Structure formats: C-alpha cells, structure tokens
Length: 415
Ligand code: COA
Image 1 (cartoon, protein in one colour):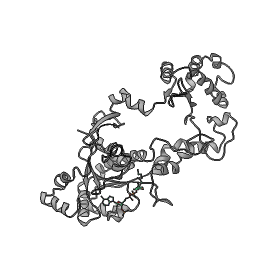
Image 2: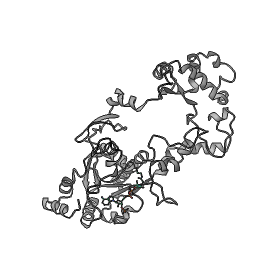
Image 3: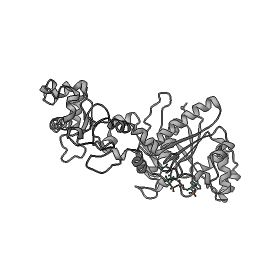
Image 4: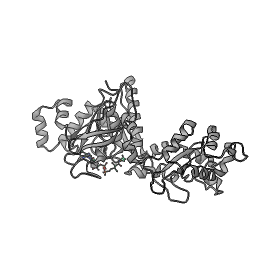
C-alpha cells in the first residue's frame, strides 16, 4: 500500500515546475495521468536531447512513475474527454501560462461544476499583482524572488544558482498544498484551489535575506565579511559570497589540489562551541585565549583573515582528509562534491537518492530518486512514459470507453 494509493491526478503539467510536483505525488503512489498534446507532448521531451529522437533526460528525470495519454483539448471530442477526466480525478495540476486553462474552457468555476471534490492546483510565475499575466521560467523567479540579488560576490553581478529553486522549489511547495487540500477534503468533502507562485516560493526559501534586510536597518551585518574589511553597507542586503546565512561564520576554503581540480574545496564552519578544537587542529592554540579571538563577537571584524589562516591549513589536505579530521572533533564542514562524485557515491545509491533506471529507447540512465523517505510507503522509481503510451488503457480503464469509441477518437484526431 502506498501513501497516496487511490488518488487520481490529472497531470496537465509541463517543463519542470509542475512535473516535479506530480512526480512526487506519483512516487507516493498517486495514479498520475499526464495529458499531452498529440504528436507534440511536453516540450521537454525534445529539449537538450543527448540521443537523437529519444526522450531527453530533462523529460525522463521529471516524469517517472506517470502514465501518458495524448489528447487535443482544443478539439470538441478532446474537451468531452477532458470533462470526463475532471469528473474521474481527484486533483488537477497545471502550470500553463496565465489564462491558458480558461481559454481551453476549463475555468475554476467550470471545474467545480464538473466535480466539486476536485482540487485544482496551479503554478504561476507571480501571484495577483502587476506581473500576474507574465510567463516565467526558473531564472526569472530567482531574480524576482530575492535570490539573485543576494547571491554572488560583493564586487560581481547578481548570480543565479544551479539549484532549481524556482521550478523544483515551487513544485515542492505545490505538492504540500495538494496533500494538505486532500487532507482537508477528508473532513469537508470539498475540493479547493491551490496556487503556488514561483516568486513566492523563491522568497520563502530566501527568508534569511529578508531577515537581514530588516537587521540592516538597525546596523551593519557583522557576520558578512565586508564588515571586517571596513566596506560600508548600502541600503539593501548585499551579496555575501560564501558567508554562512546563519549565526555561525563559514566560508569555502581551498584544499590540496585546488590548482588543477575546480572542486578541491571545503565549506568550513567556525561554530563557536568547537572553536577550541579548530584552534588546536590548525595549529593556533593561542587563539583559544587570545584577546580578539577567544570570543565569537571579537572575531567578527577579522573573519576574512581567520579563514585565510584556516585555509593555509586546509590547503595541505584533500577535502576528504579535512572532513575526516574535522568530523571527530564535531567541526561542521562539507567537501564540495562534483556531480561526477555524486553520481558515483555508493551511499546515495543505497538509499535510493540516486537511482539507475532502464528506458526502452535510451537504455540505462541515472536519475534523482525521491528525496523524502516514508517508512510505510517506499518508492520504486519507474521509467517515464513514452508519448501517449497509455492513451488507450486510460480511456478504457479509467473512463470506461469501448474499443470502438477509442477508435473513433483516433479517427477524429482527438488523441
Ligand atoms: N491540447 C491542446 N492544446 C494544449 C494542450 C493539449 N493537450 N496542452 C497545452 N495546450 C496549449 C495551451 O492551451 C496553450 O494554448 P493557448 O496559449 O492558445 O491558450 C498552449 O498550449 C501553450 O501553453 P503555455 O503554457 O503558454 O506554453 P508556453 O510554452 O508558451 O509557455 C511557460 C511555457 C512555462 C513559460 C508557461 O507555461 C508559464 O509561464 N507557466 C507558468 C509558470 C511556470 O510553471 N514556469 C516554469 C516552467 S518550468
């Protein structure tokens, strides 16, 4: 028994944000019916292809455990089928451009008429307001949600991050909204509309920077390196380089081999309770008692210089040696792992966080498995569906269509 067994999802999602959400629900056991345009499908099937004419890794890694049916929802017959699907499913998830579902004839009001228990979940770039009608991709959300202005180094331009916090981050938020609405429906019997805007999701993940904006109004941000370097603050939260977002100063330091290996670095945190251990480890025992170094507040005006000294030590060790020496002393640190190292990491394979999947057209490939582990609902990652692979079986088994009715749909070009 899977946690969401019996829940039917009408999956109208495409690209990344929506598919991440429905993939999670599918992993938890929901029957996820991905509705795609006949002959075209989700645009990502054809984007960034590494093998000609084969579904891209972009698509396959976001659409595991789903069924695919093709349906032209702009044709009359297609609309009839869509109405049946709305009646048969529990949740509709979509991330079309603003207004697209309404133009298709499926406004929230119409969906409620068809199925009052339906939970309709949408991702849009922005919530209500001046940009509500805009189309949005990942980096637009990173820029408008506060991430880009606070990422990067003080003397450089704003930076986007490799973590897809706008797309996959919003998908996660929406998935939580959906299961919460399902939980409420258990008591009320009624569906509801769930929305997650990408700007809002990014801001939610950047809340420490909104914290700092308010702190800045009361004085300099003492844990930012520019404080120690005597560089004055402006009126908005600056880019903090690799400074820790919390109260324990941290920085990325070079390790042995950094001259040739771009990932020979470690994140090193000078957590106050283990300051003595750090001083002993790096050969600076006098800092344990020396004025200007002994107390956390005294160190804030010289963080850059302190990390330079620690780096002189980390440069003599590989990132894994630093990790091995720091861990027993409770010094928090983390080696910078390349994607190559992560792909080869056996412990991630053992937990199902990285999985090898077999696909009939591309063969074996690596994917990210479910990062959320439920002891009573284990995840088995199944390959993504081919375009329209399950059209007939969904029409037949979910909607009760006869073989003749399916054929007439094909003749009418609706599927
Ligand atoms: N049958 C017939 N038509 C279909 C269909 C189907 N099965 N599925 C989709 N369509 C139509 C839609 O109705 C829409 O038509 P319309 O514009 O005439 O109303 C059209 O396909 C395209 O949809 P749209 O969402 O506008 O796609 P796009 O490629 O132009 O834009 C995004 C892509 C991502 C920018 C846009 O969908 C968006 O802003 N989404 C919300 C934010 C989001 O999720 N962004 C992150 C993506 S990772």
